[in-house]
Image (tube, rainbow, N blue to C red; front, side, top):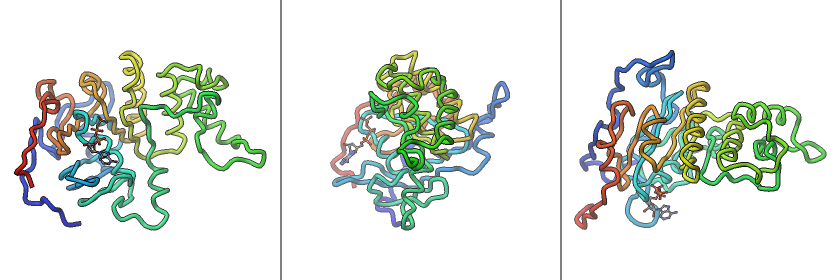
Length: 287
Ligand SMILES: Nc1ncnc2c1ncn2[C@@H]1O[C@H](COP(=O)(O)OP(=O)(O)OP(=O)(O)O)[C@@H](O)[C@H]1O
């Protein structure tokens, strides 16, 4: 696709988008960010431009997500974090650029491919989207597979859901109604539900925004563990800087729809990230 603002200068930040990965070795046997990034990316976004009705809300955005890494997406409210996530699942009005996710060319999907794309992308949201009166096991099953003849889930799916509930530390609550769980526990069920679809990429849009700090830490640890152990890239949008610094391999920061910061978390300081949250001055002369 042609790009409307091709000639314009890119925003720069603490580390340029696409800058070479750092050299810090991984500790305790975990692969370093450099090692993670040595493979092929599962998500590649280039020169992405998204506009709803008016001006662009994402402008010349580049993003790569590699197997096994947890990438925190930061930015002030309205900077475009959710829109970037939506563009990875075909929900955003892309006006220019390219988006590839798990082998799907999202801006040129074949007939019927949208469903495949969405089944390859596990999603976790701020709202846990569980039906309060239904059991935790049913919540984890989500829309997994066809129902059997008497309207139940297959034993294979039930077994798998139990395994996943065990993995997220909530199997002992499987028969309880979802409403009896704390917010952190409900988010664990939602993560199990996302894993039910065997995702190749996980998008978590503010998954800890309604949790207290301790629960937020534990949910982010869980997501990072999944990234590392399963080799699934996790893109997680966060509002709280210390959480991003504590729980991500890389940080991508948006400001007014442009990437201002992109780099390894260990190489970024809170000061370098502060401009992400400075008020944006609107320039009437802008194209
Ligand atoms: N469906 C829509 N139609 C029109 N404009 C939209 C739509 N969704 C988002 N926007 C606009 O796009 C811009 C980016 O919104 P987005 O929700 O992506 O930001 P965000 O960084 O996720 O914000 P927050 O942290 O508050 O969730 C905002 O100016 C918003 O008003």
